[in-house]
Every structure is written in C-alpha cells, then in structure tokens.
Length: 305
Image 1 (cartoon, rainbow, N blue to C red):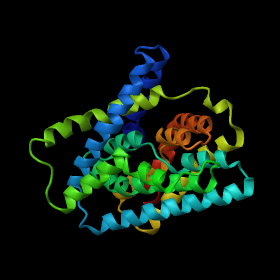
Image 2: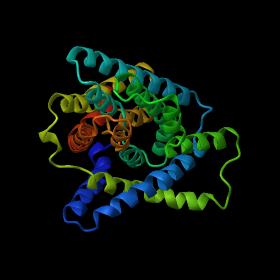
Image 3: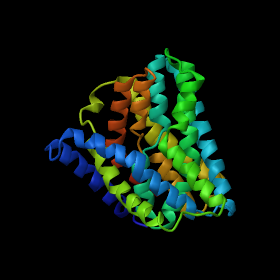
C-alpha cells in the first residue's frame, strides 16, 4: 500500500484550506458557520451511518476497544509523569494533556477512508465510538484536577451529554445493537451529509492553521507536539502489535494515535479557563508537522509484517 498516495488527497485539501484563508477567498465568518454544520450535522451523520454498518460480533471489535483503553491509559500516565518532572503550570498542563491525547476527527476519518476504502471508515467508527466519549471525560477530569477553575460535576455531565459526536456514537451503537437500523427515508439524507463531512472538514482545518504558531510557547508547545506526533504513535504500535490486531485494524488504530489534535481542545480550554493560546499553537504546529510525521508513523506497521 502506498501510504503517501493515500495521504496526498488529505494534505492537498489542508493546503487548499490554508490558501483559501490566506487569499481571503471567503469571509472569515464563513468558517465559523461551516464548522458548526460539520460538527453538529455532517460528522454525526457519518458516525451514525458507519456504526450502524459495523460488525460488533467479531472478536476484533473487542480487541480494538482494549487497544483504545490501553493507549489512553499509557498516554495519560506518560503526561502526568512528565508534568511532575517539568512542573508545568496547571493551565499549561491541561493544554499539553489535550494536545497529547485528543485526535482530529476530520483528518482521522478522511485518512481512514483513503487508506482502506469502505472498511476503513467502519473500523474507524468502532474506535471513535469508544475513544471520543472517553477522551472528553478524561480531558474534563484533568481540568477538575489541575485547573484553577475546577468544573463542577454538573459541568462535566453537560460537556459530555451535549457533545454531538458522543450522541452520534451512542445513537449508532443503539441502532446497531438493537438491529433497528436507520429508517429507509432517513438513510439517503444521512449519506449525503456524510459525504460533505470529510472534504469540508479538511478545508476548515486548513483554514484554521496559524503559520506563526511554532514561534512561541516554548517547552509546553514542544511537549504537546512530541507527545502527540512521536510518543503516541509508538505507544499505538506497541499496543496494536501486542494485541495482534489485523493489519487493517492496526493501520487504522495507528491513524488515531498519529493525527494532530482536535480544535475542540481550544473550545474546552476557553470554557474551563485553561491556556487557550497554548492549545491553539499546539494544534497549528501539530497539523503542520504531521504532514511529515504521518507517512512515517503509518509506514511502521508495514515494516513489522
């Protein structure tokens, strides 16, 4: 499999998003509206349709869930130990933690679809159905433990229960496990929304890149970037190999471990009084550098076969 050939369309759309924003082809306010449509409509539709089609009866699904739990546990432990050693400010650590563990759903699903057409998105939906709720819970809990403005239990529950991606995962799982499926008249509507999600999502990510991001933030920025783009892929490779994931499942699992951080990290940092500028810099730096690290990270499973 040519990894670069599969990644090229994703990177091309990211660069196109940068260009569109740079020449101001559309007004800046367009991206705010586009991101809302993607986040609340298109990506939930994509997750629901793929989860309904997923096969949870096979043993691979449960192994994937185990892999996700191990990856998040190892990543969290690594960052907490690093925090103790480097004694980062609480607000900075919450940003580094989000930057180290969160993944960009838009980029992840686009790469999964490109690497393994059809099956790739189904495997990705299974992983996302576990990883998205857990990551949101972990990130809010880290704010509760490390932030000066500690969120209440009510805030934690609100963050989790109002997340459209979590709700989409729960709906897709419920429809799958109950064998109800999606109503016939609704299916083509969701399919059309799902088709919009990946290209528009990648353009929005590209438009949000700050090319000057890597000039500031020092050690915390380097920690967030190195954890996400180097440490987490290595953890993912070790875990996937140890659990003997199939080549297809291991490749998609590595995508989740290797992609840059989600823009939702910035929103959460602003809401819970974290270091939002640091998160913004981490997101931009990771997105730019991942164009170099992703081909390497996704080539590693093939070298081990």
